[in-house]
Image (cartoon, rainbow, N blue to C red; front, side, top):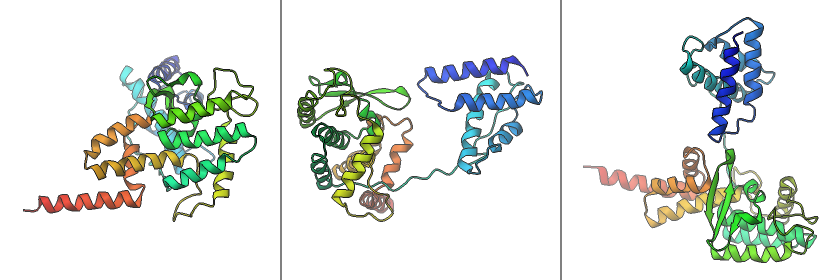
Length: 309
């Protein structure tokens, strides 16, 4: 087994992480792949070995096989660029992993108000204030719930009405806040001051002053949503905290269509605002709502009529 492959793998992972990728399971997968090559006395990366490694897992799920091959494909491309004789390029889509998205529960403004009002009845009062603020914040900004829970007080720029948000892969972005959101955060901070929390540090805290735990927050939201008995939506899972992000995105695109603006330009801006790594994830929202689908269909029909001679 050539030590060059091990060295190249370390360099590959380091360079990818330097560009912001987290690569949480890449180390173990690549190490396992290289261990297998070493055991058999193989010193090059071949397509056949990569595919065999992808399928060498106890789980029979096709998506897992695709993920394993994707990890080795990236390494092979890197090594091939250094020395084509040491690694074959692995074609894309040798194993296609199905990607399915659940239908999001899209909240109406009235339901958001209802959920916040019910959250305000939780006990103790400090927990009620934190969960109510969390719901309002993700509904108003489209943040991921984990991003909101990870905020520190120092991330709130009241003067410029901005939030500094750390999203996926450690990428930072600035999110503008409406004046009413700033006022709501100010009101929450008054309640937060009654807890044992330090004057700096985590924005949303539990009764003991530590950062509000994500599992606790999601469990409390499920309890609040159950108490509100929201209307069931065909094909939807039960309401989730994360669905406020979907609602924000869909409402933004509905508004864009209503204004007749360049929707592609709005999607590009929305992708940046939401912190999407791939804009294709933002285009998915065009199919996430029956109302939005109807608008898209109407505009396509109108365009086809205009295009006919």
